[in-house]
Amino acid sequence: MVQQTVSTVSKEGSFEASFSTLSQSQVCDQPPNFEPGEVVKIASSIPIVTAAEREEDRAMRSLLRRIGRRSLFTGETRRQLGDPHLASDVVHALITLLEGPFEERWEERMIAVWALGRVEGAPQHRAAIARSLCAVVDTDHRRASASTDQQLHQAMRRSLPFSGVVGLIAAGATITLLAATAPQDVPLIHDLWWAVFAFVGGLGAGLGSGYTASVLSLPFTLPASVALDTVRFNRVRVAATTALGRLHVPQSVGVLAKAVSDSSPNVRRAAVPALQSAISTLTPAHYGTLGGEVVPHLCAALERARERLSNDTRAAEALALSALTALENVGDGRAVTPVRRMVNTGWTAPVNALATRLLPILQERQRQEDAREMLLRGAMTPPPSSELLLRPAVTPPADPPELLLRPQ
Image 1 (cartoon, one colour):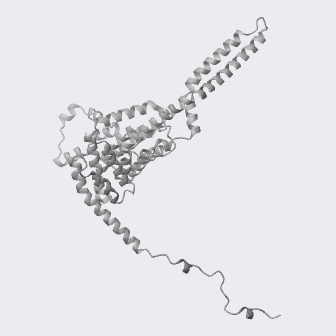
Image 2 (spheres, rainbow, N blue to C red):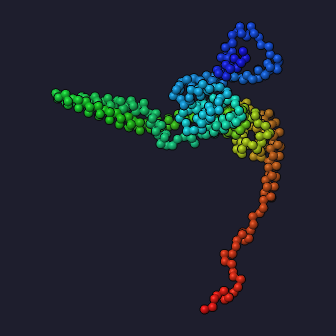
Image 3 (cartoon, helix red, strand yellow):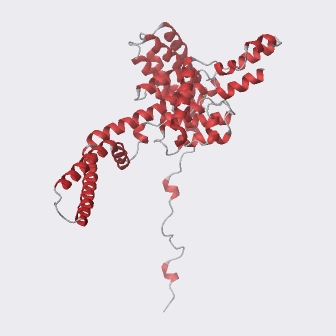
């Protein structure tokens, strides 16, 4: 019975569907006889699904049904989407969809991000997934946008309904005008030729008018097209940010801290809880292993929290505490100045206490870094003098020139 429940959870992805497969009689007639340790083990293995995750699950499955067979997913991939134990080839295919030139396939990218954020596979899979999602979050639409020619083509393609209506009106008006001016009392063959002429004229007028309308509407359709692409691109980035928070990967702290100050408000809102979730995985063992950009981004998150202090004190305090906790584990001397500014400068008592406790730690790390740099500089061998490296262009002969000449 437990195996049936677990298999149903992996297929349906929701607890309602799993427990609906077990009737009340099955549960009451055969009560399980578990040891206390087994009960704790089974209960701890069941994930806690929030209302937001259930809503996201329903939205993604609805989107998958809506795009149907026109999506890039194969039948086998569609069957595995949402399963926390994806096959390796499916994981590779979803990562390729995120990293490849598929920005226009934003719906499939949304589903790929959602599916990858639920994976509970091997550590190497989670690391590869985290790198791919970090690349999605860290890519701004201005850097990933297409060339000007491609943007113009996209805008003109999206204006096809408007230009098509204009073209049809122009074609109908031209055919009606030519039919009204057709000569009367002529042989049938002339009527046929005149009908062909009217049709060709109407077709040309329709195509020309539609193309002209599409070009003339570019000042309106091009900005709207770019704005629509930006909104869709940022929707994928928001989903990737949420997925990173769900994966709990320490390597995503730097990207999520940078996303706290993103230009998109939706990305900023999604980055705060995701960053707090990723920071909870940090330990002192991660000091110096996450790259050189992590500490500056965490300091920028502190500055972002200070800007929000007057508007939302509770949210600013939570963000500041999370960033200070991260700096306690991975911060270096570059964080001394931002943390010093936080001590006794109007912050709440928990933030002041943590900043006061953290400041000596960062100062000691800064002192060790400076001492290490001085030792490395002193151990370097000074370059030799340039005079010792130069050799005379011409070596003077050992004997006088007269002895080197042959007599006549």
